[in-house]
Image (tube, rainbow, N blue to C red; front, side):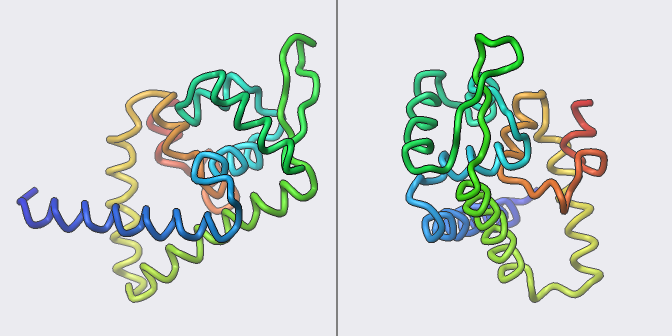
Length: 167
């Protein structure tokens, strides 16, 4: 890839990240990590704290503090895990609404940004993005981090290039 192309891709990534952060802030004051936690629990109800920590890429104690904040806001509730020693995380009704709105805002940002593409350009971009995502997903941990804000209805695991690359 030549320097100009690399710079343009970098600018696109930064611009989209900024737009996504702003959209997330419109929905919740929990920030990007809180939004990622809510979207992850929406996709994987009953997620364990240690697994959420791994997906978010933060320490166990940081995850516990984050879950404390989400629970205090009435977005998440803790329930006993399968082995009684562990804790599973579930969205409350309000948490489900907020997480669903986060995913919808993410979708809206991308539709605005990519709305000028023709159908053919969109298909080409999808193929390119799938190829790049496959290259990025070098481990299960990395794959889960990449997909932490994904819409699992739009891209179910069986159709996900990231999931396929680590399965």
